[in-house]
Length: 112
Length: 117
Image (cartoon, rainbow over all chains, first blue to last red; front, side):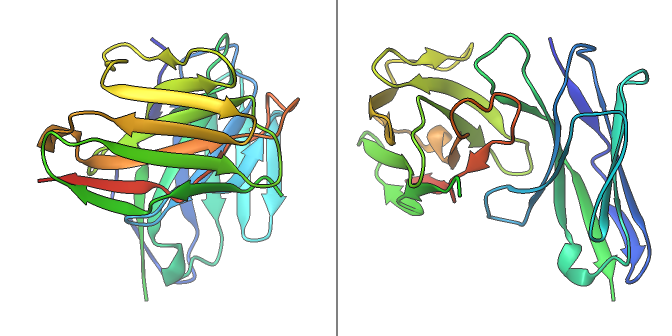
């Protein structure tokens, strides 16, 4: 059973701090990794994706991938109250038609 | 680009009735669409994979006769919840990606909140 694991949180950080979200996955053959943000009652929206080992930066967001450790993380710099949401880590289900397997999500709360 | 539209956003129905949810790819053709379900405080779980012009593939534990999927065109997939019961109340979300981009992100519709009374 392919799995994606995340700490459910809640993770609470003060406004302006760095939020660090972590994710591990079980399928060593996974090649594509995604972070989605989901506000309560809403559909997931894509934050970042990463395919290669190392860091990928987009504005205040940095995704980090370590395939050897089967670990992917998301850093949010200068956290804002509007970043308060559940962050979902996802990988493509290899051998399938391309559906995503999601972690249970980490709930982030940014305190003003 | 890659916009997925889902309708309705929410629906309330009585137990025993059927509900149809539509998922459209607005600016691309989607030979494959994915239907997810999310119960409160849980993550998204794949229900089925919808394939244009052929039968859908259902995940283990999902009743194909209860959750009817029709993918009659390259831009439309429908999910019909038949004989709905209160335990079917959930958030149903469809998704798709642009063709030829297997490793790219999935784009999600806005979801349908189903409440069965």
